[in-house]
Length: 232
Image 1 (spheres, rainbow, N blue to C red):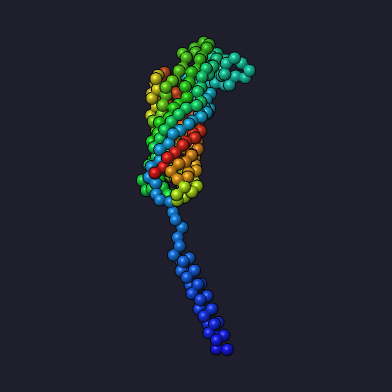
Image 2: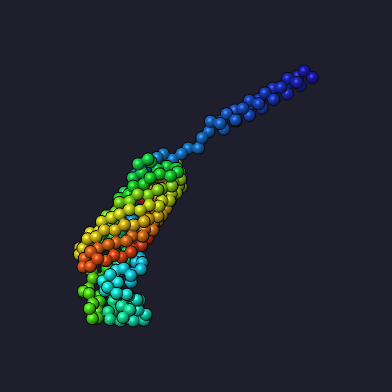
């Protein structure tokens, strides 16, 4: 009987020791977090769409209301029918590059992102015909040099684990081209996935581009941008 009691006591003692060790291990274990990153460089591919094109810049050029033409050889006409407008070229594809800085680091949670970038604007050629029509409009070799600030929320993984992020922000820029210079302001939002330092990002930007030559005019572009990124 005494031997049985001793055996039971030993089993209980070992069980209690094992439970205590497991509890201690659980208390000391912590999830490994991704280290902070401070800079991202990107190479950008853009596909740009115009928005409210008849309002701006076409109405700016002709000084009167403009409507889209249906089943005609031209694209637009003034509402009084005096001037016919043909968009000869609007090149939608472009390229760009950028650098994003995270002053407080990027790992898990929200942080501030400061970005500088350069991107192509569409090549634009517009022809006018009719009484009082303005001369042909040409915009070539246009590039925007932008600076922006954004709030970025990230959930990066340690090592080569899959992480994600999203951002929203806005900024201003200068435009330089072969024919004229201008400025712009914009809002942008997007997000992406990453594995280690490599990632891919998709963004949508609403940019109002403004020029003063040959008359004050502006046009709204909406580039959808796919970025390949390197973060460290």
